[in-house]
Length: 168
Image (tube, rainbow, N blue to C red; front, side, top):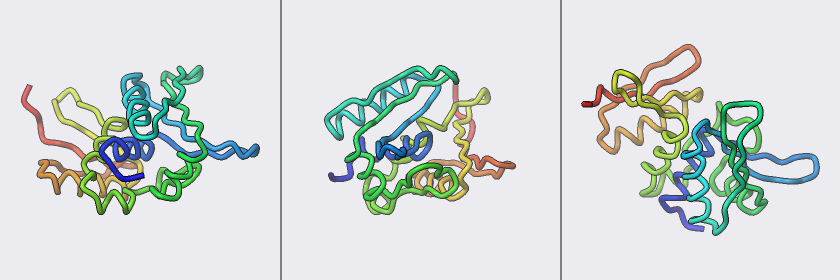
C-alpha cells in the first residue's frame, strides 16, 4: 500500500483518538472514538477509499461519543508494522510515522490529528490540545513547514498548538 492523502489522514485520526487492539481470542482491530459523528464518518470514508471497505459505526452507551470499529487483522497489522502505531495505550509514545515524515503527505497527517483533537475557540483561535509532547512537536513542525503562523504552550498535562486570532 502506498502512502496517500486519505491514508495519512486516517493515520493521524488513529494517532489522535484511536487505538489498535488485540484481545485474548486473538481478535485484532482498530477503534477510533470522537464526540462528532461527522468526524467518524470522514474516517470511515478514508478507510473505504484506502482499503475498499467500511468499518462499523456505533453510538457509545457510556460516553457522548461515536465509535468506528475496524475489524480487519490485515489492516490493523498494516498500521502496526508499516505505520509504527503500537497496540494498546499509546498516548505518550506515538509520533508521526517515519514513512509519512519522508512523504509529501505530512500536512494530511496533521489534518487527521486536528480533525479529532482540534477546536475553534470563542476568540476565533484554532487550538489543538495533545497530551503527548512529542506528537505536539511533530504537528507544530508540520504546520510551521507549511507556513502556518502558530505558537505552542505547555499546560499541566496538555500541550497546545494554537493559531493567532482568525478574522470572523
